[in-house]
Image 1 (spheres, rainbow, N blue to C red):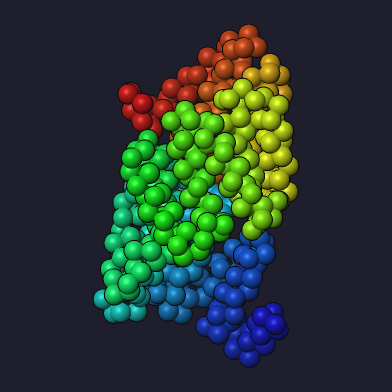
Image 2 (cartoon, rainbow, N blue to C red):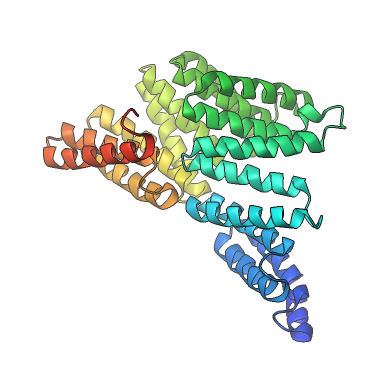
Length: 361
């Protein structure tokens, strides 16, 4: 239907008419929902060019399209492109506030998305600033509602902020966020909802990081049960949870179970998102860690190098996750007596960590 509408509008109004742009947005949205991200990006880019030419580069509609493009890059990478377009969108939206063409809620959504992107890039300090801004706007906007503290958008931002705190090692701050979100989501959605399971998974990761892998396993198994029931067994979120479960099984010396769920994660992620996606890279790294532990050093090295290429595309070579994979490559080469290669890898890790976290990291 959209294609027919688009054809008629182009014929009657020309390719640069605003009505053509409005239909192209819907076409792009359909492609996005289908997972056809290349076509979605082409549609959004065409819309962006039309709006800029007809309405100027600071029009609110331009900001709206930039937000969509930022979300797309957040899904498929690279993250630095998402960061760039979302910053542009925020600038336009803030400039348009004076004319009341953009609501503060619109800005909050873009601040939240930018925070998610910055978290994925490892820039958690800046991410928390974005989340706090989004949270402040949303709390104020829903202040008149009796259930404002449990409004789903507020809870989503609190969860994201908690995850950023977790990644920074701020366990108490993370736990406070997760507790608020778990209470709010369970009241509004129920304990069996996938959104509540998302918070449970965050709590499981905190438990694992504190060394309580037995409790983490129990919680992750509950998360898996909900996710499989609500999302299907072939969901990318199931793959992510299986990766975490494999890590805790390994720490508990339950090697056979770790290997089984790690392979399941790899198969599901390959099918759900493809072999060039960061979710697949994380699954593959879990498999490589187990291969290295079993002494299958050739297979482990091959897997780590594939992971490194994917991570470089998505998060760049200055991210601490990139350094972690390099470190594992160094460990694997060291165990293989390939000392020159190990030294090169460790030197690159050292430089990356110095640039990212300073001498004391």
